[in-house]
Structure formats: structure tokens, C-alpha cells
Length: 109
Image (cartoon, rainbow, N blue to C red; front, side):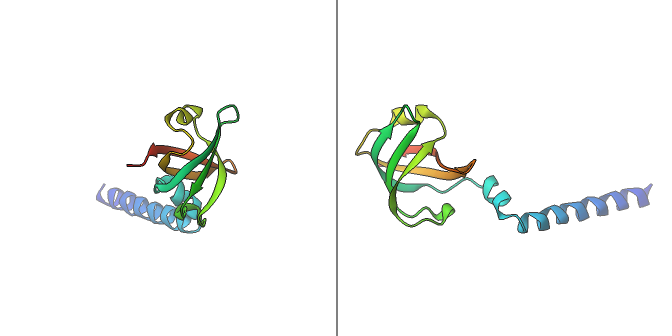
């Protein structure tokens, strides 16, 4: 019985290390698990019908993007009710189904 337990523990450790090694070859998996850091920006335009917002933003580290003004989709259109043109915001964006998407937004202090 002790041999079976030892074997199962060793097998579990081996599988765990294989999963970790596999994630090392697929950084998008690790990135998907970690929440995106908030970036600063200013709301330039809101299109509620299309579910889009234009933000002049600082660097987006998680997307390796330089500061610029660009249009993002929003994960939930209700997010657009929290902001208005001219607001300074902190937000998180990620690439979801191939589209740059705001996943979190809050007014900056």
C-alpha cells in the first residue's frame, strides 16, 4: 500500500510539472489567468449602440502597447454608463476573441 501511495504522489508531481512546463510554452494561458493591470486614460468618445469607447491612454503593459488614442470594445455595455466624455479613468483591457476589449473601468481619483 505504501508503494502505491508513493507512486501516486510521484505521478501527481510529474503531471503538475508537465502542466507548468506546458504553460511556459503557452504564455497566453498564464496571461489569461492573471488580471490585467489598470492603465490610465481619458474618455474621448462613447458609442453605446456599438458597445465601444475611445480612450486616449498611457502604456498598456499587458498588451505591449505604447500610449495612443484608440477604440475599444467593452466587455459589458453597462460599463459605459459609468463614464462620460472627458472623464479620467483607470481601466484594464485585454484581447478577447481577437478584439481589444475593456474588461474593467473606474473613474480616476
